[in-house]
Length: 215
Length: 240
Image (cartoon, rainbow over all chains, first blue to last red; front, side, top):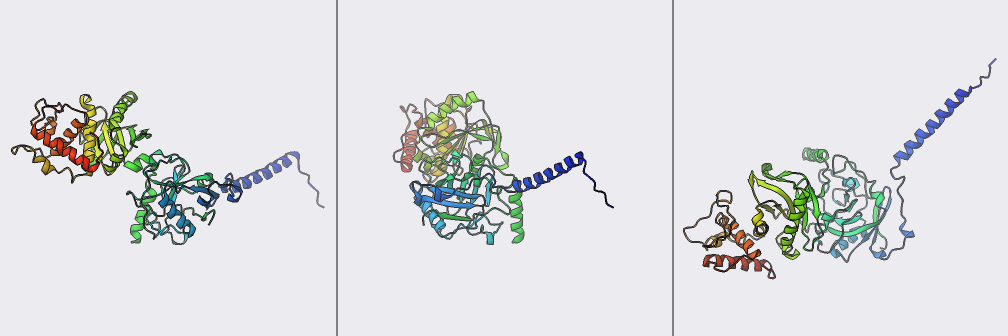
């Protein structure tokens, strides 16, 4: 004969506590793991733009980043960027250089592709279209969200690599060629993977896609 | 090849992140922005802490107190405002670093131009009597570094008396006086006698501060014309 044993009040409390703890633990695990949890994803179709022909959509792991290009400031650089975007050249390209809270850099089409990543050469790759002359004379505030073409130590060496600022950098004016500004979704870029001890990222995040709003 | 790449990768991944934009741009540590909104687009930086740079860490400069910095900045800016953006771009000068007790290999110096890095380091406490002239003197070195072919030292030396010879370097001599001669005899100052490039810089700086050019001797007159003609070649609108 089996006697039915009733749980005491204290045992019920402990059991309830353990169940709550388990729910909290697993809940927290999935919440913390989701780095994009509090990042708003912008749908460009729900936004009206003054210059839709100059809008590009950068899709990253945490959603869309909407960038307005300024061809009136840097016509040649923007033309190059649009050419590469239109050919889908930036898809699956690494954010190979990331300085926490300062900038992210991507666009090495030669050594930064997901299926052809070369850590020894990343950052030195070319697009095959040649270089673009620096366009640094027009006034431009390099504030948070500014997008510019990267170059080597010398001027007139811009090609396909670009950077996006995560903080104001007034000294970049007349140093780098600006091409536009992020107008929505900068938060998604703050979640791009970085390392504490290096600007160059091992196993980096990648651009999912980069498209013109209007082809 | 893979080993080299591995070492390169290891190096890139172990160096400390240097997020300091100023350091990334001009390779001088411990600087902060003083002023960037200037008409000629010069960027003024100051030493927040002492810094050491150069081959064998032989260049040193120290931070100033705020009052000195504010006072001297006005003087520096007033003088450098005379060079427009177009001219500064031609001579590759963009960053002015303000600090004090500047020295190279423990020898005090007024300024150090580096036209590759587009930088001029200025000692704001160097010789208060001639501080404004010294600013232009150092700017000339930036001009000269960018246009060595124009400011030919052999041509320049040919203006002097045949028996005169410059020292091998500006620190290889004790001719350091900056007082302007009343009787010039080919040179504005004692320091002019050190080297050809220092002589040119002295002529240029005297022209820039509007020194009295009456009673100039024929040798110095030739030197003045040489400087003026070559400046016009760099920028025909340059105003002395």
